[in-house]
Image (cartoon, helix red, strand yellow):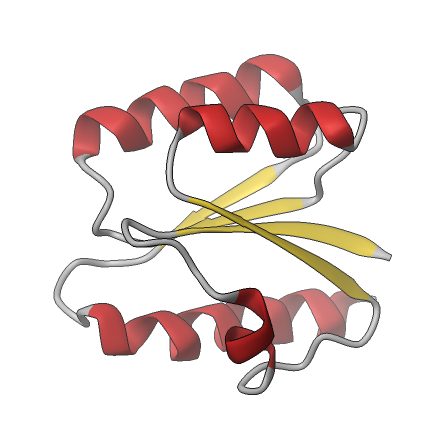
Length: 105
């Protein structure tokens, strides 16, 4: 089971989000800030496979989150969505990243 954290400025409603993505073999978590990321990592013994981050989080906070992730984990990948595709681009972005994960399994 792959553990994936989805981060967005307003949070991501996982049950609603799951209706638009393939979640077989994937456990999803969500958050909006560093404290929530820390909680998810701690609750999962720092074994998170992937973090997918929306562009709505301020650059300063995104950099803090990335620094934290790379400090506590050597096996977590981070994927950052572009700004221009807007909030409606999050679901397609997540699907594309997860498609790559599923195809590599």
